[in-house]
Length: 618
Ligand SMILES: Nc1ncnc2c1ncn2[C@@H]1O[C@H](COP(=O)(O)OP(=O)(O)OP(=O)(O)O)[C@@H](O)[C@H]1O
Image (tube, rainbow, N blue to C red; front, side):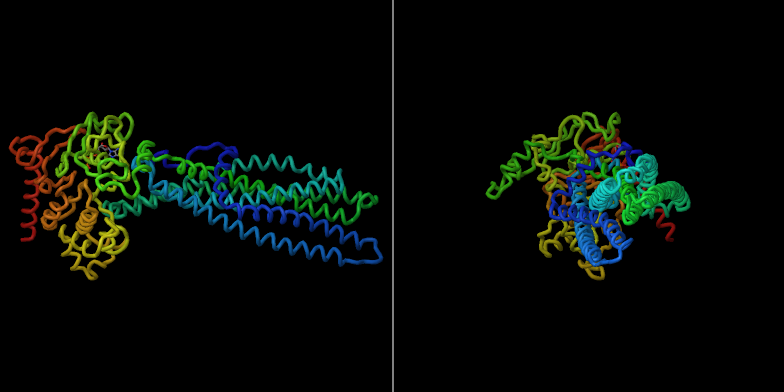
């Protein structure tokens, strides 16, 4: 797996700027933030006041002949009541904030992922992206809602207790507080250790998610290649590495927490020893000593909490950085400012019918590749100075050896990628000067592994044009000869295709996707290897359908099965990103060049295969 797919390296320090950017996502929920902050302060004040009430009660009893405990009881009851309301408000607001924020962040991430160009996804495995959308978003929302609240509560409590201790008995107060510096140092050391091990854990978690996704997507291939054992071994390797770092993380916590608790006990011991002496000499009341011992124990709880929240924040910093970097990624392919300005001017009712949403002619007369250079990776050119002109109504077939650049050419024609040099022109105008939305809404694409969505066949065809009537859906299916097999199915057009369409054969999925493309009535039709897995019989079926699709459009067809593209207006033999030969089927056959060789070899191979088939079947 590429380094890029793993956890990125970030600074070990708490990045306040980053958290500032993350916390900005909480601002729309001010109505929840204010009660949240108030309740945190109220809870801290109540928590700190209980020991003072205890002091009051003890001093009202010790050495007194007349005892009236009702006032402290009343205050205690009032405090308990306030604490209950504070905790209720706290949980209610924090839960609301956490849910709203994770919803917002996830939605923003999803929206951004939809806007990003294909090149972005080339370097990021699905599992990595799924982790961003799920665990990272959740983690951030939890930290913002619960972590920040814990932090606010803990800081308030520490400050209030420190002030009370100093006011009650400055010397003893400072003695108890003297345990704070070693606690801070120990916390800083362990925070760093915990951060690093939790980051390692996340790295392996992300790799395991990616491995799961890859294993599920490639299940059939793994089974057919009997790779299950090796896959399991690789997975076990990842899993035991994850186990190792998780155990290390747990061990560090197991050492850190007892140290913090021991320091708390030392502080309580100091209070007992020094306070006890003062009580005996009459310099301190018993109630104050009790309050001190109480505070000495209580004081370290919020410090521990602060340390934990900071560790969590540092641990989530990676998640924050990744989510923010995803949100900050600007789509590599998008409308320029000039195009956006034209859209604002023209995309409104009353626009002349012959004009597109960007105010330029709606019709597509021609597409030109003008000295186009392209590389997926810098320094590894796939196309150099590529030229091609296609006019409306023409079908261009791209054939040639694997890796020659056929798919790249159609990806560029679809503007899934942008040329690294040269231009692609539509009606003689640079494609980058036209609206991306307008252009891509003119495209109809059928790929090798056609993707169907969960739902019925009818819904899948209608996906091409949502407002199409049932008759139009069925007419499209008839045109591509899909109607017959659909009606033969148990529920006809209402048959559920299953997840990703896996209840249909590849050929059937392709026919459905043809119908979907035809229904969308695109001006540019792109078919990449779409007929490669259709048997000869089905291929015959779709030939007429394809004619219906090609008619009156600009069509690009990448096909390994050469019989499919015999009727193409122009066949281009592509090798190493260059056009080796160009012409129609008859011309190229007469020329007896590369195409002739490809065609005759394929023809012979098919004949041989059918002969073997016939012999095998007797
Ligand atoms: N997403 C990608 N990232 C990096 N390199 C790529 C990517 N897609 C294709 N390539 C490389 O670009 C070159 C051209 O690939 P392309 O898929 O366009 O060829 P093709 O002629 O369509 O091949 P095939 O017939 O096997 O589909 C190949 O060397 C390929 O490895």
